[in-house]
Amino acid sequence: MSVTLTDHYLKRVDALDNALRSCIATSQRLAGIRSATGRHFYASVLFTTLCTRAVSLATLAPHSPWAERKIEHWDFASIAGLTRSILEVRLAFFYLCGEKCSPEEWDCRWNIFNLHDCVSRMCLFESMSPESGDIEGFSVQAEELRGRLTGNSYFMALPEKQRNKLLKGANAYLYPLEDLAQRTGVEIQTFRWLYRLLSSQLHGLPLSFYRMGEQEQGRGVHSEVEEGYTSLCLSLCVSFLVAARDEMERLFSQGDCSN
Figure 1: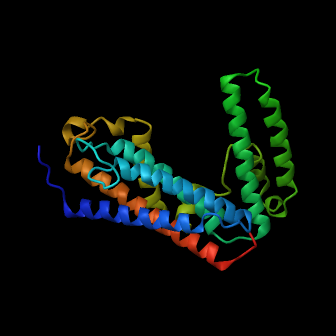
Figure 2: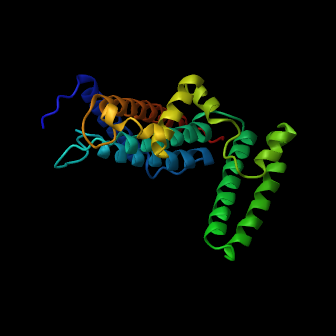
Figure 3: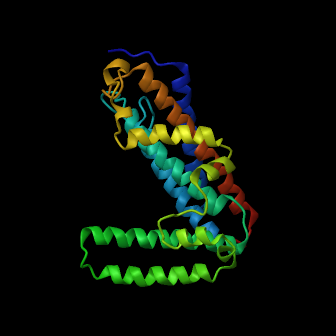
């Protein structure tokens, strides 16, 4: 069956294609450059992650030049899940690489990330095999990371309640994601709405399927609702890619060797 797409959607597909190719070109051009600081190293890691997930999004998007397919499959729910992931990687990039801060604060941010990673791995192994010998090693590493944090002047200047919470390792960030989003230029209310929308699709909550028949959504076929929400995701991804690319360019062009 022939489907008439709006110019708005086709422009979003084209914009994603252009932004993604520009980001990949930037990534390839900066590849092999020795990381002057931890900020530069994680910029490379996170920017590569951002590009990789954006390629997956572009591959899923109907009528995208990134994939050849026999039929155009419309699946906003899957695209929403990838978009939320890309949003979170974008915020991680800004937090660890794009936003300037003192060396002490950067070390604090980094070690909170490290502690969260360590505790998450320990919980994963505990869930799989409570008797695993790896758990003890993670526990020792977590205590070492807590020692790094309590020896950090920026961390120790935080309120005691916040310090105690962060030392548990359940939080990866010093600040709520909505605060980070606001510092990247996204209004808090807008972020909350977007995050709820994307999360409802990712987790398969009732919001993602209750009106399937009414809105012709979630059946793999084109509809105004599927096209509209997919357009939104593509637009968001373009903005995240362009912002991270510009921060990446600035970081590596400055030759700044401080965190």
